[in-house]
Length: 232
Image (cartoon, rainbow, N blue to C red):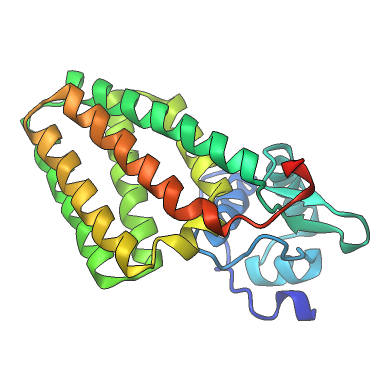
């Protein structure tokens, strides 16, 4: 195995009903989201095939889609690598995220019944527990479950897809900023504010809580952006 991939651990693909390409893409996204694959990491086909237990043909199909999404890119002699985000892109992503999250919580409250509110309450508590534990992967997984549920109730598949892509692009920043104790404590209070707004069915407060959470996440994460040519 190449030196570039020795520290990377990807779970073998389980061959079930879903298209193999989709499973490979999901596995790669999870690895990036959780910090197992870092920006600038070189992606070696042979090593990825061995870890995932898939053919090069299937892997290449998945990598082409990730490249089209701007998640990975060909960088000269280094070959295919995980893309580093520019400051300009990061700033825009957080602005867009704030708008999307404000929208989905408004839509959620328009459609949520008592059971949905109870489930949202429980999922918020899972996020808070993950922050208290200081486990980055647990935080990522808890927030993923929460937003998947909220977008499902809101009946907004497009918003869910966009949020997944946007958060993936800023994964490198989140992995550094989220685990800081100051940011963890701040995030807990922000999630509690969001939970209170949802349980009170207060649309304006929910929208404001969402914007505040994303805005503070941006302030915490942007200092970790490395200078890139895209920054001009």
